[in-house]
Length: 170
Image (cartoon, rainbow, N blue to C red; front, side, top):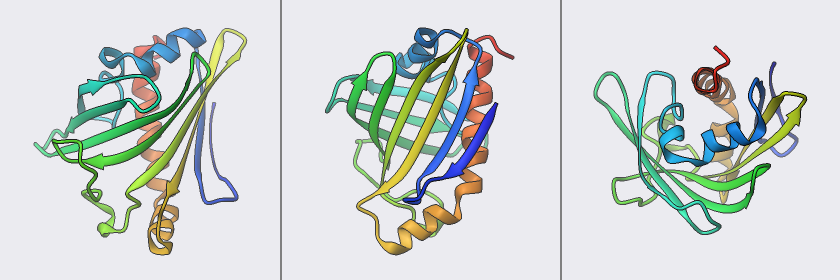
């Protein structure tokens, strides 16, 4: 049910079918109370502090790790086509929603990732396909991104496992 492939432009792509209607899966991605229950690396607790689902709107959240660490995330939405497509710029941030370097990846992780998520019906299931592509990145940032495809696959696979449980699939 899962696939991961590298697109020609150096993008990360992961796809998974969820045993839930498209509207239910869409809501899990767009309603803060549901998003906070599954988004982020497996084992983190996510708290959504701001969420405005509209082009130009922002999501701002922090993720707390079991060892007491905290990471911040910021989405700036570009396109919303309910219930089939979401596009946003994804960044690590600080507590004030300022864009910052990732707290890992040796300081060369791209500051911005263009995120595109599509939701397509497959019978009674919904296929989610997520694409991440570095934006305004230097060559070393693009190489760092490409070198971490395995880590991204592991992270998103864990998130998708939690999402599947939330949707009633596990």
